[in-house]
Length: 225
Image 1: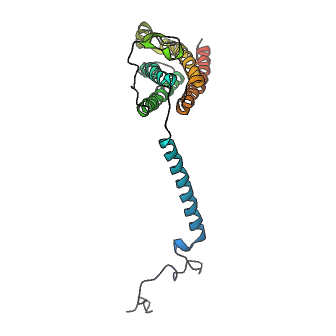
Image 2 (image 1 turned 30 degrees about the vertical axis):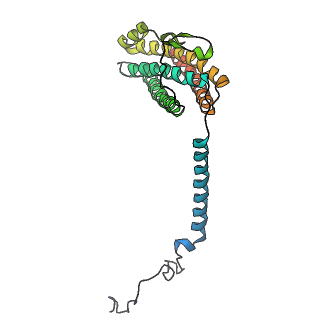
């Protein structure tokens, strides 16, 4: 058989080795191209290193102490109120967009951290929430759960729900600054006294993040005054 130009067709399938590229050079199969081999080896090494890390993390036996467990349980409750306040502010009308933006970031960020705390508690085989009416016994500062430092009162939450406009923004910032300050007090203790690296890292991240948010909220309050 001939092609449309009258030239003879090949008698068998063309191979990659025989195929010329547009510049007249030979196109090697991917497994014969040195660059592809290098890229493959790098990928295998990265995958192996990552797998080793994951296996090491999974096979390491955590040894949480009372601070690890108590902090995770109580801070989860503490975070839940911050998420609630953030969502409340986002539902108000006439509020400054910068205030709404930080409320959105706090609600999202603390919801994510709550998920991490639940995951760690499950891994440690512990209840996902404090099952008593007393909090912070793990840091020798026992208080009723609803009196943890920084928590807004029921009346404060009602006021926030009823507020609108700049009043809602100022009240949210004031309540959330106090909320963060109380949470940082608990997290700083966990950084110094928790026994697992996971809890220490999480608590340290909370301290750093909330310190920055406090500064941002204080600046917003000052600008609104």
